[in-house]
Image 1: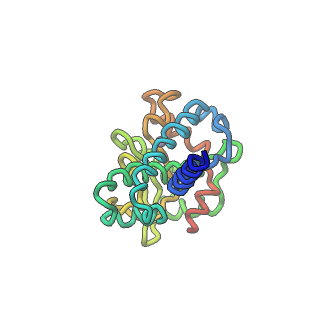
Image 2: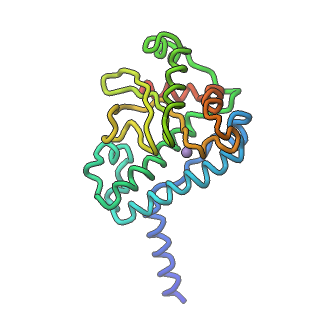
Image 3: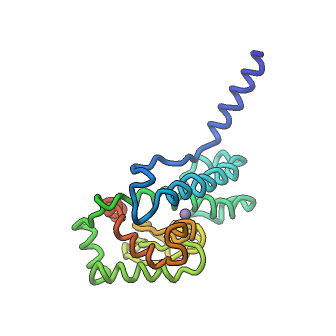
Amino acid sequence: MKKTFLLFSITLLASVALAQYQLPGLSYSYKALEPYIDSTTMYIHYNNHHGAYTKNLNDALAKYPELQKKPLAELFANMDQVPADIKVSVRNNGGGVYNHVLFWELLTPASKSKITPFVEQELIKSFGTVDKFKEAFEKAAATRFGSGWAWLVKDKAGKYRIISTPNQDNPLMSVIDVNGQPVLALDVWEHAYYLKYQSKRADYIKNFWNIVNWNKVEELMKK
Ligand code: MN3
């Protein structure tokens, strides 16, 4: 009996120690982004999709405790050093974890979504007007073929660039042409919008502007 309990405790401790990545808390409820993102989509996206990336990443890293201790950004920056047997999983599931943690933070209820003077000035300096920036970002999101993301990236020279990436790739990954700090991200996988918007990806993209957390954008721009 005692021995069983001890074994159970050790197994539990080991699994806790290894389960490095967890779903983050959300600072708003599933329905808080309505009518732009519906609560069912939020629930499934967060628990099932983000949940699966998290579990799969932990499973992949279980064999490599030394990699678990490294921040994902460090693994992404040195993809060539990630062991061959988990490289694809780190790219897909690690990307899935990182991108979604960031995405949830970049969203906020419409009542709190207000562009800050700092962000406005930065966008005007780089793109002429905020509307021109939005137009270019929307185009990147709309023209990403299949599943992926649209990004505003501050590259290593400090220049703002709009790009899109396939799958769960992101601008921190050494395998991507444009590297830098992501400052805005939009998930254009069908799982992010299909229940509400069906094939109308463009409507989902337009509505994204109602729920952007511009305070977070400012924080990332200043990073
Ligand atoms: Mn997603």
